[in-house]
Length: 307
Image 1 (cartoon, rainbow, N blue to C red):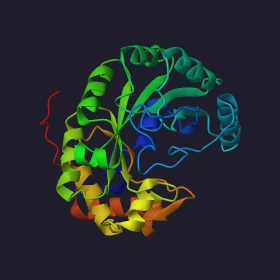
Image 2 (image 1 turned 90 degrees about the horizontal axis):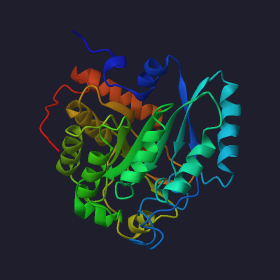
Image 3 (image 1 turned 45 degrees about the horizontal axis):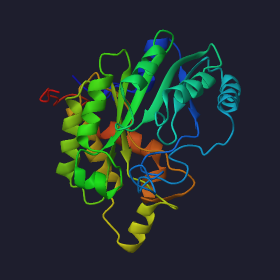
Image 4 (image 1 turned 180 degrees about the vertical axis):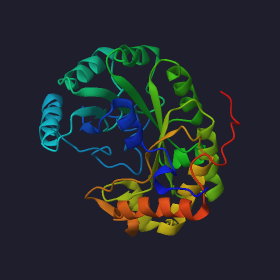
């Protein structure tokens, strides 16, 4: 039986359309948080790949204004359902009462059906998980944990300030709470080999999580990684190498794991790799490569990890 392109992996858009019987668009929020590897609690400067926007919009408007302006714009395109996504920096890095105030401030429209919170695995505890769980009566709730790599050498090099063990603890704490879990990994970290990358993917494949975001490493101006790349250049995967690795990862992930992302969205500060701006091309090449292989997500998955 031939493999059809639309079926080679379980996309997030497919999941959302089936779950809510409608297109659902993300509303990205910058809630004014920071990170423990920025404010001196663990380190300063943040992750080496992250600039002062914290991988977000850099907006300084109130949360309500950010949400309302995006709903106003998207509703003109006949979008009827929305997911609020707290993206910039670490969105559980504050006392619970502050978190609740900021989450509540975003939920201003009945067309909002989901709440997603991006954070670090070392910045959650039972109280914060209980707060997120309290929203599940009305909303689908997602927690997105930035793992990036299971290799401590890599985590130290990019100044993450957490360990694989912190990540496992966070997943254990979040699982079975009616909260969906998404994990972020990066393909192309300095000095990581193909085997290093696949070890991270195999580790993630055995976890009780719902989704994954696979990011290509981007080098942007204003980051420590940019300075490192200029002064001590390291290997960057070619477009073809990246596509092959992503396909290899997809083949070992469970077929019911939702694929939220297969490459990144470069900002205006983007420098390298040159192919990084070709998102639609990369997505097309990934599908074409899987079809060429007569393969798909999950074809080689084996459950080989137990928490």
